[in-house]
Image 1: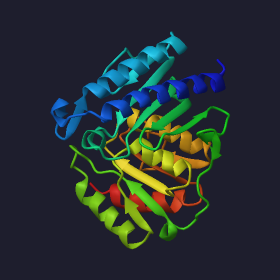
Image 2: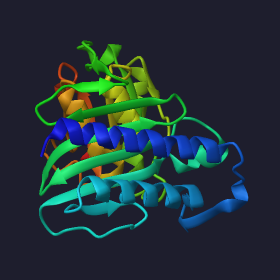
Image 3: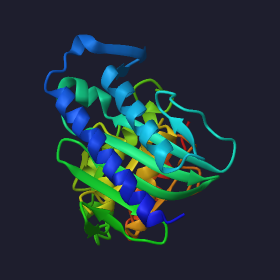
Length: 265
């Protein structure tokens, strides 16, 4: 497989699907929203976006399976699987608030091969493939050079159903409010990770996430020179429902702080 060519095909597919999402937003009504669970929403735009993406990816790699948020396609027990979020930031989308993004990753067993994130509202596509660099709209991107957490701008996300760790999480946020350049919560984990990759954020952490929220972004961060792990510093950040990502200079002290708070149960 030529990963560069495959990635560029996925970029084109994500961009085209993003144009569909952008057009639908112009006439979208909140009464078209369905509720999957507590604070967990979906609309016909999510579903149609996923159908378009799955159809396009199947044409690119007919042998690959799918791990998709809305359940389209079948996952293969081993080998190649696409990991797809057709609209990351649905709550933002239904309220007309940026950002919201498409996230697509390709995994071979447990190894990520490429990642594409298309942030719809700014028309920015972030992407990377194995043994390559990371890009945004054709320009190479790198994580920032800031090496002190006190000078870092940090992104996070709020849980919308899993509140078991909310107390230590709130304590961690207070720490970063006091001892960083500030905290931001954009409402799209895929976008948060893309922004770490291009240096807009120095670090990101969140728990209660799914593989489709983080797979593409985690890969792009690493290809852009950053580091990614779970809260314990291990590699279970795709399926372990917790992730930190940071530039390589901030990563270690940032991990220590997050781990100190979020290991409390």
